[in-house]
Structures are given as structure tokens and as C-alpha cells.
Image (cartoon, rainbow, N blue to C red; front, top):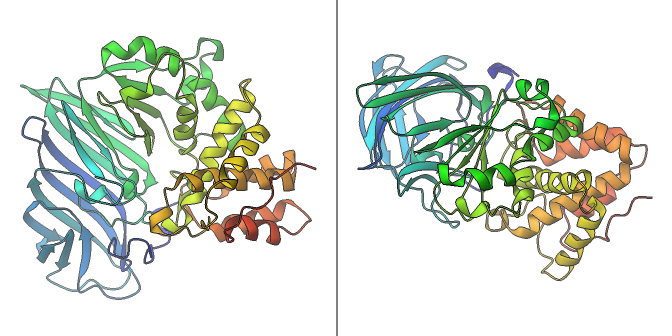
Length: 449
């Protein structure tokens, strides 16, 4: 889908202070310099954007507490104010409706996470290096952006660091250039990407090609898989992630072609509460390696997000279950296909667990407070399983594969999935999906006929 086909984002009811619906960005070019010791970040962000249906006399970017050097709009100095994470820009001349324009922001500072009810989000300084985990609103912690999941853009990111450090960004590594004691890494992510799905990892990491000797060469050539991790963790990683190529093959079979050019895994030299996905990259902590594949379901979960969440992206945060429900179900599908418990058995366990918990979650609009509640993940997986039971095996998997194909690199909402699923059966799904998506009480356990 080209930038012209992407819809402009609307107001997100969960985060109304983020983003600006009056324009959309179709490309970011970030040229940054980062010094790990003093945690100093500086550089230039150049945004290529298109005004909406009304002339733009002013527009806003989301950016945390950095010192602004200068701001240019179409090469001319612009007036601006920068308060409370909002950079409000007034061009020297109003931008016409539908006009293409560029914004250039020069900034420096000490990046730190954005505070939220879930803790710090975004740029996090590590003991030796840094990482970025932005979901849902942490992207402004390190670059100026139109921080909406639906405002997807391509990215070119250049980061200069001291040479001992490796820089990982989602996308294709274009160049790596060393001059004196610094190295500049330039990555290109051509696929439309949400601001929260842009990540950076900086650390002293070993690089490892993830391969499956039993899978043959050709599939791995098609989807290069690379890992970056501290050298001492190599033996545990090789075992714990040893079946990731098989997951990739399975998910391509079930969900359609992998939607990006490459896939990377980072194991940060820190413990992390949970792993997290970004566009083309998933990041884990040292605590997710135990040498016995204790976190393998999470390996499957984060990989599945490349289809569900990253390529097919939610229009706003009300629809978070579309990301997490399908990723949870991918865990169950992997277990089912790799000799473990069946998806039906996982569904029964999840249903029993939910039955013992409060019944006040509306899956299709959980509210900001509950959008990352464990119940949303489990009920989301059960809703996908309910569709499988209602549609039957062939129709269900055809529906899923078509969903990822039709909406590849696009944005969707719950209503889109409801309408899409209805095309794969003669029976009405209204009552079934209404009970799972919009009602609090837990429906009966789905069972295949």
C-alpha cells in the first residue's frame, strides 16, 4: 500500500493528547548521534508529510524534553513552542490543503522513558547501551513524530555510536562506516511503520545467523533471520531459539508470506519484564533464556506480531485485541503443530482461567486501563478459536491468510475483521462475535462441531 492510500489517523480516545490528525507523515529520515556514557542523543529528524483536507497554519509533533536547535518547514525557519511533550509548529507560510511538505527538527538531550501507568516507555538507558520499547506511546522519548498507530511511514535511520557498540534497527542495514573511534549504522525500513514500532538496540553484542539445518537453505535465504546477544548467552540461545526457523515456516504456511525483508532478535544484556516486538525485530531479556525453551511460547508470540500488529496495524488502541488475540492464538497453533497441546486444550485452560476472574472486560473496547490486562490476551485467543470452530478448518485458515494479504501494511479495526470473517461462512456470526467482543460475561467454551 502506497503512502497515498494510507488513511490519516483520527483522534485516539485512549491517548487524545498524542498525534495530530490534520496531516500524515509518509517518511522519516533520522540522523542521530548517541554517546552511551553520558546518555547523550542528538541529531536531525526530517519528516516528509502531506497536509489534510484543511490548510495548515499550525501543526504538532510529539517530542519529549529535548533542547531544540532549529526547526525548518520546507527549508524556511518556523516558529514553535515546546511544552509538555508537544512541539507546536507554525510555518512561515500556511500550508495548502493536500500539500506535501517537509519538517526538519534539530535537537539534543538526554533521552529517558516517557512516564505512563505501565512504567517507563521508549528510550531506556541500560548498564552498557540502550534499547527502545515504545508501545504504546513511548516513541516521542527519542524522536519527533506524529505518534498514532495508524500514521504509518517508511524510515531511514542513521545512528553514530562508539565503535565497540552494535546498533540494531528494524529494517535492512544499508551501510556501516567506521571513522576514527565511531561507527555510523544506516538502516532502511521501506514498509509502512507505526511510530511505536520503531526500535533501536545499542550494545556490545555478538551477531549470529539463525538457521535450521533440517529446513534447507532456500527458505532461510528468503527470510534472513539474525540474532544479536552477549557472547556468554550463545549456548542457551542456540537451544532456546533453535526452533524459530520452523516457526517462521509454519506461520508463513498459516498466515501467508512474512511481510518484511528480514527478522532480527535481540537479547539485551538485562532482565526485561516481558519481551516486545517492533517492526522486523523482537527484543528479549537475559531472563528469557533458560536453556530448556521455557519461553518458547513468547518466541512464537513476538514472531506472530510481525503479521498481526506490525503489517496489519490497528487504527487506534481500542482494537489492541486484534494484535494480542492473534499473537496469543499463534502460540497455541505453534504448540499444536510442534507436538505439544492442541489449540483446543489451550483454549479450555484459558477459558477455565477466565471463568474464575472478574467479568468486566469488553474485548473490543477494553479502555485504557485494561488494554494490557492478561484477560485481554486470553479472551482474544479464545475469540480467534471461536471463529475457527464456527468457520471450520479450511475456511478459518483461508480467512486468516486472506486477512493478512488484503490488509498487508494497512490499518484495521474490529469491524473490519467482523465483516471479513462473515464472508467465509453461510451462518450469521453476529451473536457469536457480539458475545465475545462486546459483552462482559464469558461465553461458553467454543467447541468445533
